Amino acid sequence: MTALLEAPPLTAEDLLRRSDDRRYELVDGKLVEKTMAATATLVASEIHGLLWNHCRSTSSGAVFLSEQGYQCFPHRPNTVRFPDVSFITRARLSPDLAEGYIRIVPDLVVEVLSPTDLARDVSRRITDYLRAGVRLLWVVDPEARLVFVYHQGRPGLILTEHDYLEGEDVLPGFRVAVREIFRPLELLQPSPPGS
Image (cartoon, rainbow, N blue to C red):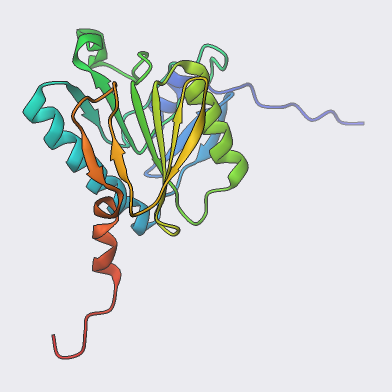
C-alpha cells in the first residue's frame, strides 16, 4: 500500500514569492483563488475612490486596494487575506508597513461579492476579520444592491439603495447614499437607441 503524502502548508513568504498573475489568498496554508467579476471591480473602485477622497480631505488614515494583503489572524497563522478595500486610521499607521503583508488589523474592511463567491467562503472571511478585531466590515452585493454592515459583538445590519452608508466612529464624517456606490453599474447597461 502506498501512502499519499500531503504537501506541507504554505507560508505567507511562499505566497509572496509566487510569480503567476492569478490572485490567491492563503487560508490555513492552502492557496484559495480569489476572482473578481467586472461588477465587483467597478463597485470596489467606486468605494475606494469615495473613501480615498474622504481620507485625503480629513487626513484620517490610509485606504488600500485589493492588492494589499493582511497577515493579522492569530487564530489562523498561515492565513493572508486580501480585502477588496481596506482602511487603517492614521494613528495606527507605522513605517513597518513598508514590506510584505500588513500585520496590523485594518479598522475597516470592504468585501464586494462576485457571482462566483460561495456563501461558506464569504462567511469564513467575515468571521476571520471580526475575530482578528476589524471594527467595521461592509459586505457589498452588487447584484442585490445591498450592503451588509458588521461590527464587533453586535448584530449585522442590511442597507438598501434608499439608505446611507456611514463610517461611524471608524471614519467620522463619511456618509454616502448606498445607491451612489452602485452608480458605476449603469455603465454596463445597454445604451439607449440613437445615443
